[in-house]
Image (cartoon, rainbow, N blue to C red; front, side, top):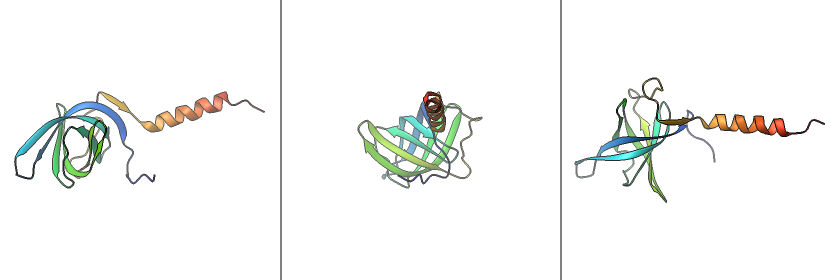
Length: 122
């Protein structure tokens, strides 16, 4: 699969609140699990779907990010919702750092280093 994102998403886990208006115009709020984050986007897991192109706000005590839903996929444990952040609402680790944060590139680097160490020199 080809990565289409312009920036690397960092894997994370933290509880956030997501707010949006449903098709009747009523404000909806739900607690969600923050799955990944980058400067330009986030992925949250919710119990309910949110339609593509819906404006949403993702909140934590230390941040407030606004954007639009780009995808909404159901998987075994719930709906995974990708949000493209508005240009004036970018994430910065200095502003908010999720409880658990991992750069997957570091895992690859560690695996390569381990493999090189365990390879016998000929």
